[in-house]
Length: 366
Ligand code: 13P
Ligand code: SF4
Image (cartoon, rainbow, N blue to C red):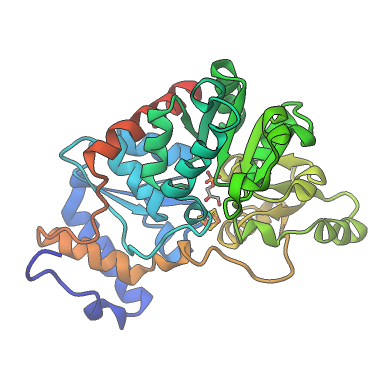
């Protein structure tokens, strides 16, 4: 942190209302130098300050196109890394709380993926036979790994197109870190379940036999999102028993069983669009993060749309929730003083290859 920067402790005791006024004043002063990007899972007190909101794909495009000097990302760490990688060298990406990570992204790391690549090389030649695909929910060095090995990044909006591209390059895919997005997308493309094997990163050879590796079309990293894993097929059955005409919509990070029982499956942006365009007086059960589901309920209740959260237990993304008005006010007032705190900067040797994999994705999903 620069010398004399304002300290977070001076903001921690402020109430949300006081922060709200200070955020507005700082935004006004920073003008065109600042853009605030907000993921759909952000809490309302932060979300309404975003200049642009979106899913991971939309926000990465926004970061690439923004000319602002400061890109403040209200989201999680990998999103701010993407903003840094795709923006210009004079632009600065900031994450209001550096502890806002993604537990799923943390389930894969470079050492484990490189080990998997070496172990696969004892059975097949991965550089000839395997396209590595990383979900955007991953650290920059994994995107860089994909860039160096002819691979690509995907989001939940473009996973099918990215897999189609990947199979046009090589016969197999190593998909990390989310098994569910990989399986749900692969199955939707007609790949049978027994041709998608699970790579257990804590076991030698991923716990697979040579035969399983040779037969596999997709090797799925055994990662998952703890928020989306909460949704169960029983929740859908119970809701349908009460409301047989209800529509079910889920994010593809939910399990295979949940997605199979859902009428619609797609990214946060897709969920928002589908419910917005639905007939009035319809009832929805939604399998994605609570802040977004609550917002959808509020936005559409006047049209008679009844939007419910899929799990009986309250589950939010606790890391997305770390971005609070206090941290946002803190970083913005520092910017007004010319001080940058919480910059997220990917080393250029890593960023260079990560950019290759990200740009492939943006081209494929254009
Ligand atoms: P989206 O790309 O649908 O916004 O999903 C990001 C995410 O982290 C979902 O858990
Ligand atoms: Fe990561 Fe899950 Fe939170 Fe999305 S909802 S940011 S995948 S932990």
